[in-house]
Amino acid sequence: MKLIVGLGNPGPAYAWTRHNLGFRVVDRLAEKLGATLTRREAHALVGMAPMDGFSLLLAKPQTYMNLSGRAVGELVRRYEIPLEELLVVLDDLDLPLGTIRIRRRGSAGGHRGLSSVIEALSSSEFPRLRLGIRPNASIADTVAFVLSPFEPEEEPIVEGMIERAVAAALLWAREGIERAMAEFNARRPVLEEPSPVVDCPEIGKG
Image (cartoon, rainbow, N blue to C red):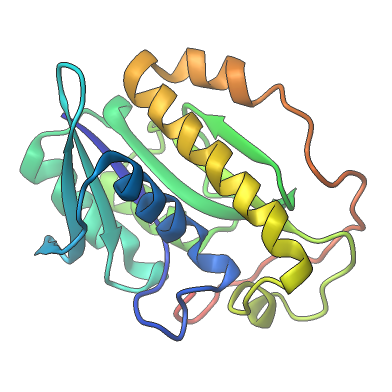
């Protein structure tokens, strides 16, 4: 069994915010695979999708972003998921809008949800798929920014990014991290040379 977890905040108020890209990717995966994310388990909404030779568990923690590790840790322990078979999907302010990056390990990079997962697992040795949300302009208030929806003109870029993220996640599940990194990390970002932004501080629910 493999596990893909999308990070985000529960509830309609957050559904279309930049910080909920992880949820949107997992929802799109469920749609493509014919799975339903309706079962509540381990502080998350989960669904199972059969793949060739294995099962793929999809999950959206319902703990709010900063406590995401509570759900991820419990699912990993309950299903005895090896960390290399876990993929965490999240937004990333360090990447330009439209860019995706898949990595086999790494630090939290200031992302409180990812930090919570690392703490719960006592390890940063698990794959993660990051989706860029940094605009081509400076950001005055990072908290307000990540908890706000995308602009209408950004949505076509976001949709393309989500589709690439779904393809990358499925390639990771079927053929492994090296194949997914080789295929998707070499692609050029949609937006290039963005203006620098300030570091993202700890965000209340975000």
